[in-house]
Length: 67
Image (cartoon, rainbow, N blue to C red; front, top):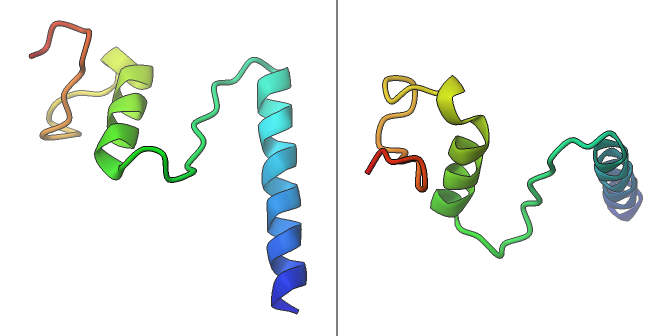
């Protein structure tokens, strides 16, 4: 039963990624190649000015002149 659930989850995730890319939506894949800090940086860079330091203390915005 667990194997079927895991396979279904992978299928749903793959479909979501395909759909997002087809629509031009950026996809952040969590595959272990980046640690949590690196993923947080990607998200912070993506959302840029929509995030404030108050909402996300300690998350820098590399390449945006905030360092």
